[in-house]
Length: 480
Ligand code: FES
Ligand code: FE
Image (cartoon, rainbow, N blue to C red; front, side, top):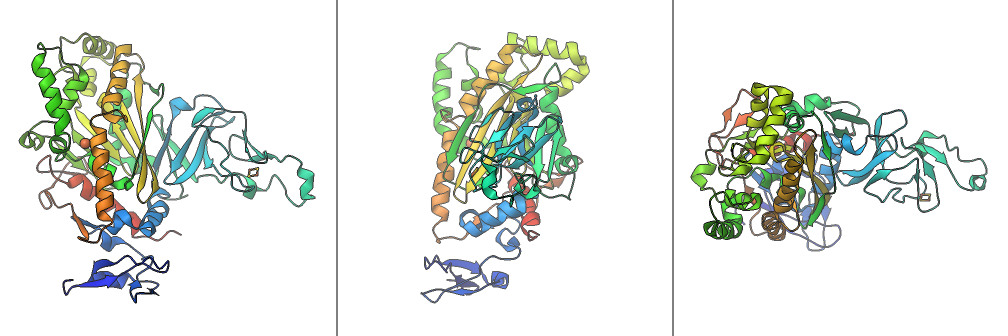
């Protein structure tokens, strides 16, 4: 132990886990517990901000259940969290079940035409009211004792209610499913915030509205829909590991080397122009790091970020004129928007827009991922793709193949990343080294006229630092 470190541990459960923290962190100590081994524990800190100074992060941020619990309260209940897409909620009674952090909610379109989000937890004895992921209902009936709730969450019926002898009033608002404070939609993307004050959704999204605009504008008919199913993948790692990975241009050619090599070997056997999208995707990850450095990387206040496109060859770039699907799509876009506007929309070459804390949008390839933190060391990733109304059906088929090749359990790409997350989580459980480094490019990021910063090179860890700047902002304030 170096002289500037001190020894802390985690009672009172008796399972003493020794941590080595900077001396300054001792000032965070609120309740101090003793443990059988004579160690002491700082308990829940007021601010947590010392755990993530600019450019590094303490391993507790990924492994401590107290930090995770505070994140659910301080980040996921305050931020605007993506919960649904309006194409899933077109008619009264349409609903999806979703999560705000680790809290299950029902998102439903009510008979008044409004969308409401409310706790998926029965006010009788706590049963999950709705187990389905999506559907349409006139009312939600709890499967345990049959209490019935309207599609705005209000209690509308108690079977055999006389047994309460008039002591329970079904109209008591406390018996309604607890409503999430605010639900707003931006161009069909529905978000919730469980605080009654704070920024509006548009203010919160800031420059990221452009990512949603571009996702929708890519439909010649001006509308998109989530069609068909999606995938869910669980990994045994912290939710932030996935957010950190999605704009990390440094890892692709290294982590995904096996699929890059296999794809290249197959491509070498093919005629020019015979490579399908999956092959083009796999090869794209093998771009040399010097070329990755040429890709733009943007970070914003609020924790949002995005990176430029890095597919340089083939029809997946959507720039080739000899691909019949792209040509038909371009014609439909020009017909609806005119040539200049169509080129503006199609020409915005980006990849993975991160809307903090739980949404990853990829407009050009019509993909979406949504993170569901389950526990400090467990996360579920939901992925889906969009159909562009007015575009050739083959565009949708391509987006499904993209989803399969990149964001599904069968993907040879995402499975590499998940192996990293699992192994990182295991390793961070050990106290060998307490700090994780995020300093690549620190001090060289530049202010950009889009309201954020741009990395000097594409492999800068700017997006990760942007996420932790937001993390400090949220985590520095105790929940009311
Ligand atoms: Fe829902 Fe009893 S727990 S009706
Ligand atoms: Fe990856």
